[in-house]
Amino acid sequence: MRNHLKIHCILPVILLSTVFLSACAFNDSLPPSNVNEIKTDHEDVSKTGSGSENTAKSAVDFDHELDDYTPKKDHYNFYFTYKTIHPWWDAVALGMEDAQRQYLEKGITITYEYMAPEAVSAEDQIKRLSEAKDRDFDVIGVDVADDEIISPILDEMVDSGIKVMTFSSSDASEGCKRIAYVGNTHNYEDGAALTEALCEKLEYRGKVAILVGSVGDPCHEDRARGAKDTIAKYPDMKIVATEYDKDSVDLAYELTISILKDNPDLDGIICCNMSNPVGAARAVTETGSNTVIVGMDHDQEALHYLKDGVIYCLGVQDCYSIGFDTIQTAVKIADGNKPGDLFREKSAEITTVIYQEDAAIMLELLYGDD
Image (cartoon, rainbow, N blue to C red; front, side):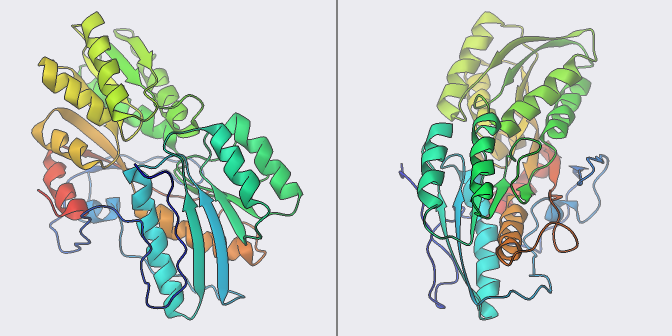
């Protein structure tokens, strides 16, 4: 596995950086899908219900153009560090690359480094930030590994004059001095929505387990909290296990095998990151369990399990839009702008809950695979 991922593109002939989502197909002509959509904006107002004809395409929106803001410089240099090397962040990189290309067409060169460790580590993130802060980047962007540990570091960087934003999946703690956040602002609601779908499927009775992800990871912990609060509403629902899989497919598989051994009558599993639905589905398939799985995101194997009915539903985040909006926001922050009319302090990216009937379309849309 790669130790880290670095993007540093400056030549006009290079329109895409080196990170890419394997076999991703930008196909805008696919038929619509019937999906449920959670659109949670800056004020945390959520919406669920039947999807419209355009919902499938809007779940992962590849149709982006730069807004009419005029940058003050013709070259920007950014540093982005995210939590771990994983296909989810490769999808974010696609949006970054497209924004970079569109700026280049306007005569504006965007260079950036895109760095991550092999496993989530707040200590590793502190080391990367310590090295980056002395290298004269226009903006440093952080996908926060642990909000309690990293937020004070970001405050110190801002106090020293460094322009810092957060992006991708996890914001800093409330009150952190970072300038803005571009990413999922409704992880709690995502966890609650997926759990509500599971409860309805189980007719509001049964034993469930939660696979969280990484200890201290804001988005994983928030989804788990949303799941627990939803389960607590129903007296005939019970959580029998909560485990941390460190965003590892293999560990999620092992934990699920263990949970099923201790609870052979387990009714449901709530998965709070992109890796654990795959690990859980492998275990459920291997053991022949009827346990119902709900989880997050667009992993290709997970979508196949969704298509086959092993996974009941997935909450798909629009990673592409997150990446595109991150670059646009970073340019504005570099120019000295503050949240307001030009950009929000917190973005309004969406999560779309998809079901078995949507899996083939999503596989074709994202991977050219049905």
